Length: 388
Ligand code: N2P
Image (cartoon, rainbow, N blue to C red; front, top):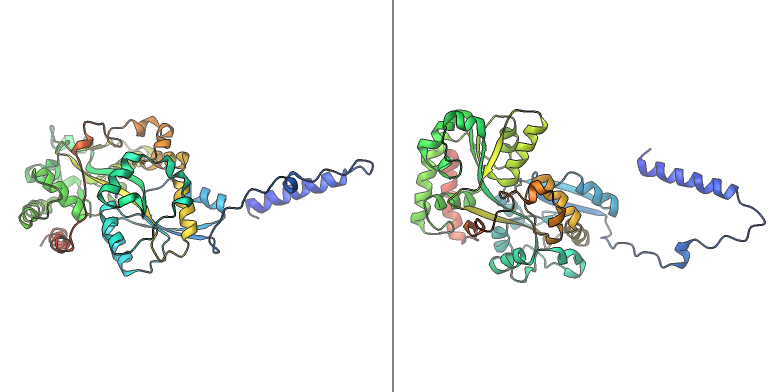
């Protein structure tokens, strides 16, 4: 018997016992409150109580989906990805069956233009009032005018994730606050044996190389892309793999020692190592050259089979206590202002997660690319990944 049936039968037993104790002389019991007070309106859902979510891996507190299911009776099918390109290929092909997807804003922007998303029904999202206007405006100005199609879920940076002991063992004064850790062959070569990894995120990684070279990270000049490719090809022999999710586990268990990674993922690696009682100190630095900044956005495809349920879940994620729980769990910054005081101090006051005002201007948003540039970038990336 499952828990809810058990509760039901216990309640039924109590009702029977109460009825059996009834006294003939007693006046008729007043009608139950529910009969007089207007019933609380049932939450409106789609006819089918199902929700298909496609989110980044390692990007939600494990309790959040089950709690939403329990409260609403909606069954959530939850799939994960680790690359905007993979998500985009599916979205452009259409009929994904997904009700909610989470592209980064630079990708969302062109997906909106391609007609991939429906406009949000803001009347169904009263918790929008909790969101930080400053972040919403930033996304609106660069990617989604009026914030008509998407709500920010998390934002963050990519930077230097490393195993402190293994790095200092190999290089006492390693420049852990610089992209030189990856892009200077004389530095990165020192860590080849302990395992170096890079995100499989072409536009973001090329942006970091351009930052390192002191160029505009969103440049589409072919000569800038060529300069970035030269750097990437030179360091390729020292990179163990190019992947955007495997490194969490590998940093945690000491399989790799240096990852160009996303902030929350690196901290999840640190937590996993601590939880396993490993003597591994994992750290994250925003490089002094600056960093690429992403805004990951909750959006509903035009052909979503359960758009009402999708709005319910997005609104649920914007509850301050849910947003805080998610940030505490995955160590990414949310932009839910009403949640800020509920986030644990460790996360809220960590300048790697919520960078200080002096660092913010050094963070560069990844901007949408032209299709022509994407073609060139894809070629560069294939050469880098294959090392040819
Ligand atoms: C979660 C990575 C999400 C950040 N594992 C990249 N947009």
